[in-house]
Length: 513
Image (cartoon, rainbow, N blue to C red; front, side):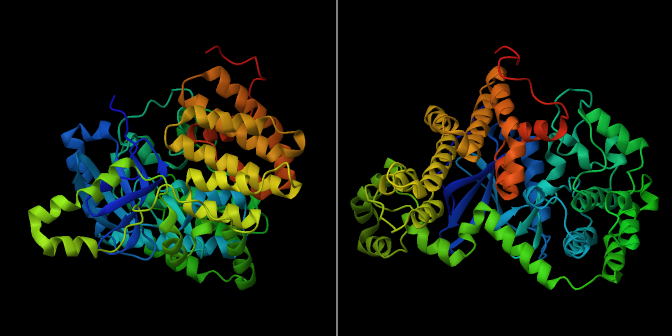
C-alpha cells in the first residue's frame, strides 16, 4: 500500500500547503494559501492508494466537477479540481468552525428554536442539490460544518458515493466504523437506488440526534444498526424531549418514514413545514450559544481571516530546506529570463512560507497571550516558547498554558510523523498529579490514538481504559473540556467510546500485542 506523503510546506499548482486540517480514509485535508488570489482555502488531496486506480480518479474528477456546480450559501463551495506532481486534489472553501459532530459534543441538546435554525439551513442545501439532481448519500454530523456565526455548510456533495460505503458492506464485522451506518436510509442498507429522499431520511436521523442527544438506533455492530433502520420505529421523540412542540416531532418522524413515499418528497416541502413552526423568539439564546461555540472550538483562535493573514507571516518558522534553494536559484533566472524576469520575481508578493527559520519567537507578555500566539502560528518553536518564557515551576498560574502547549505540540509532532516525540509529551501529561486530570486525560487520549495506529491493542486499550476512568469526573466539572477531550480521539476510538456500553478492560487485562 502506498504511504500517504506529508505535504505540509509543499506547493500544488497555485496553492501552498500550510498545515494539516484532518485526515480520512479517502483524503487528507490541508489549509492552503492560494498565491494568485491571496486567500485561504482547504485542499483535499486524494489518498495515493486511490490515485493508482484510473477509473476511481475519473469518477473522482467527474463527481467533484458536478459538485462544483452547487453554489449555495449552505454548501461548501468547490473552487477547482486538479492534479500536480501525480497528486489529485480538490480545492474548496475554507470554513472557519467545526463539524456538527463537534457541536454535539459541546451541546448534547439544544432548544427547538436553535435546532430549527440548523434544520432549515441543511434543508436549504438539500433543496439546492435536489434542483440539480444531486444526491449527497452521506448526510451526517461529520459532513456538516457549523461556522462561528452559526451558519451551516454541508460538505462533500457528490463525493460520498466514492467512499467504501458505496460498495457492499460487511455488516457483520465487529468493530465496523459506526459513523455512516447510524445515518443510512433503509434503501441504502438494502442496496437499492437512492434519491434525495434518502438524504431527507439521513437528515431526520441527524435532527433526532440534535434534539434528543443521541441517534434513534444504536448497536455494537453495523448489522445491528442496519436491522433497526429496516424494521424498528424510532422511539417517539416526544418521550425523549417532552418540551418539544408536537408539530416539530411530527416533522422529524415524517423524515424517518421507512417507506420513501411516506417521507417528504422534496426538501422544499420540509422547508415549508419548518418555517411554519411558531417558536418563541430565540435571539438571546442563539447569541449565547454561538458565543459558547466560539469559545469552546479551537478554531476560534482564527475566526478572523484578517487575523490569520497578519499572524501567518510567522507561520512556517520551520521552513523546509528546499525553500532556501529557490532563493539561490535567482541568478539562474536572471541568466535564463533576463532582467525583467528578475525584477518581477523580486517584486512578487511575499509568501507566508518565506520566513526566516531561525527567527526567535517574541515574548508576548503573559502566558495566555503566548499560548494564543502559538495557537495562531502552530509551529514547534512557538509552542516551545510557552514553557520557555513561562515555565511551570516559577508560577502555578503558568501551569495550564504549559500543559496545554505540550498537548498541542504533541499533536503537531504526530501530524508530522514524529511519533516518538509525541509519545514523550503524552507521557509527561499522564505523569501529572491527579489535580491535573484534564491534561492527564489528553495524554491518555493521545497515547490511545498513536498506539491504535501502530496496531498495539494492549497499549491502546490500556490508555483508553485509563481515559474512561476519569472522563465522568471531567464531564461533571467542565462539560466543555470534556467535549474537546472526546473530540481529540481519532474516529475509530471515538466510535468505540460512543457505541460500547461496557467499560474497557482494566489495564493489564486487554488483548496481547
